[in-house]
Length: 136
Image (cartoon, rainbow, N blue to C red; front, side, top):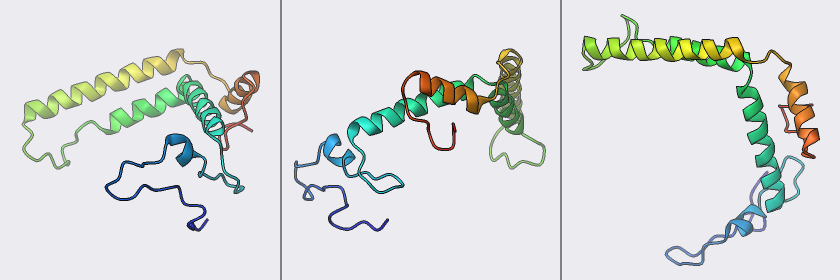
């Protein structure tokens, strides 16, 4: 979408104190279909995102991915280490291994469910619209 003077959020004059309120700025945001979203629409979408993020973080897949990220962050011999001492590198490696193990433990107790169905059901229970890309 090309922003014109009519679709651009209101701006205060440089150096002035007439900055638009959050409601004024929010009313100019648009979604994929084009109509402006109200502040309540943004809050409802935010609620959906918070709920879907919480549900995703409750899954074993999420915790396995986090464990892999910490494992990948363990310093390797061929890494550029700058001025880090061997003691600092070993401390970093111990920290990353510990965090990876904690994530694997979380994965072992997390529920194994189809997250898309779970998110859709939770959103429907709360009377919220589904979030694009998260629930059908």
